[in-house]
Length: 333
Image (cartoon, rainbow, N blue to C red; front, top):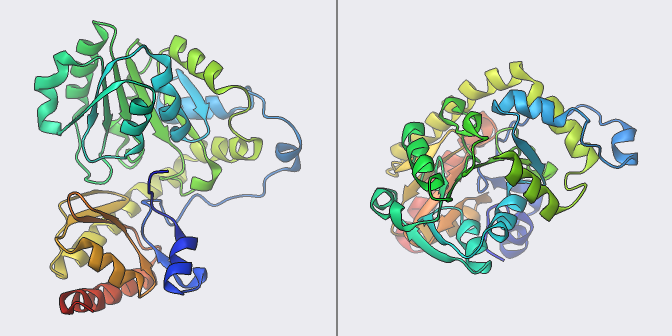
C-alpha cells in the first residue's frame, strides 16, 4: 500500500496524542464540507438504482452527460489500465503515486515526465496521465494545451487521462465538459471539494463506450445508496458551491501568507492546500506532529503539503505550532 495523508489513528498511537486533540492538515480535503441532512432509511435499506437522480445532478455539475459514477476516482484509476493492451504510458512526475503504480501493475511501460518534457515525449506515448492541478505541487496545465494533446493522442488510438481531483474551485479549467469523444478520460473526485471523502464517490467523464467497459469491469452497485443520495443533493446545491469557492480561495491565501511570514514561502498550491520545498521537511513534520499538527511530507524532493485549517482557531493553532516547530527543528530537538 502506498502512503497517503489522513492516517490519524497511526499518528495518535505513535505520538501519544488523543485523536480528538489533533489538527489534521494532511489530506487536502475541505474542512468545512457540505452540510449533511438526515439520510432517509430507504437509502440504506434498498440496493442502489442507476436512475436515482445522481447522474442527472452530476451532469449538471460537471457539464457533460457522459459520466460513470464510481467508488471514488481511485476505483477508476486502478481499473482503467486493464482496459488497454500493453501501452507506453507517460505519467506526470511527482504526483499522486497511485497513477504510476496502477499502470505499472497492469504491465504497461511507464515513463515519468516533468511537465516541461511532455511536449517532446508525446509522439512516443500511447497514454498520457496528468493531474491538473497537480497534487502536491499545484502545477497547472491550460485547457487549450490539454485539448491539443488529446487530439494528437486520439488520432492514433491513444488516451489522455486527466485527474481533476482538485479542480472544483476553478471549474472553468476543467476538461469534463469536453468529454465524449474517444481518447479523453477525466477523473473527478467528489470528496475533496465537498469535504465528504468518506462517501467514496467519484466520476469518470469519457466516451460512452469506455464508460460502459469500465462499468462492466467494476460490476454493479459500486457506489452505496446513502453516498449516492448525499452526492446527488450536494452536486445540485449551487448556492453552497458559489459561496464555498471564494471562501476556499481566501483561506488558502491566508495559509500561504502565514507560511511565507514564517520564512516558508509556498512553491505551489491550490485552493485546498499549499506546497513548499524544505531541506528539513521530515524534521519539521515530526516537530509539528509532536504538537498535534499533522501535515503531509514528501521525500524526493523534500517538501511539505499543508491543508486548510478548519477555522480561525485552527489557523491560529497552526501558526503557533509552526513557529515552535521551526525553532525546535533548527535546534535539532
